[in-house]
Image (tube, rainbow over all chains, first blue to last red; front, side):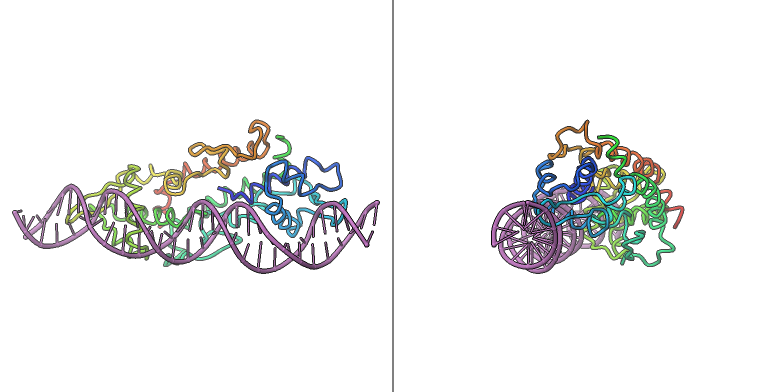
Length: 138
Length: 138
DNA sequence: TAATTACCCTATCTTTTTTATAGGTTTTAT
DNA sequence: ATAAAACCTATAAAAAAGATAGGGTAATTA
């Protein structure tokens, strides 16, 4: 399951996507819309900004805005950013690889091999589905 | 990511699959092979037994054994048993459904719709890959 | 039938991760 | 200047995961 952080990130991105006509959107508008703590959401939006997905403007009249086209924001990118690995095991993660300590030889591990296949199938979906797909359905 | 519990379950099933020639396998044999705490593993094997995947025999000469054919043990079954939902959001889980409190209308939620698609794609893989696939690669 | 062996159960503790909060700093428009 | 808003860092609270302990129960062998 996705963490709340990631779920909230998707909500925020959806909200921002739906309000692309206005220059900026306040954290508060989003936090009220979804009943998310203002401060908690703040951290999430910051991360999305650092990742180059959102832009922001400080001071009065400021706020956040989408910097990328919705079709260029893959689900995989958001999930990796907030939740970490998409792979089901550390030993098959592309971005957060770690060996399994209990594993004597990765090359001889059937579980490893199968999980690589699972990972690739999951990525096929998560890299191709984007924020645009979410917005289309709203 | 899968929990260690689930990963250990797969290791145990793999071990049992590889030793189907012998009548039973001791918990200790598996726990030593993978460096898993005996007691921790005990709980896992118990759950697998209750789910009808493993059988066991008490007393001297006892132990655990696979009760199902490896091809009939889908990854999805093991994951759901030890880890819970496969879906990325509670509101799209088939087996562990819960509404998202922040969501006013599921029918109008684009995120919900997209995550249903993601879930179905994930299930396509996880229901079709089985213990047999793992054993083939060992 | 008695000792052995291993399954079965419950409870608790520790660690890690997630979720949330707090309080101050910097920037911008008016 | 002042108010409004994002930015930053640290910490606390809660929940989940991981691990351990100790015994109870049942079955098998000798």
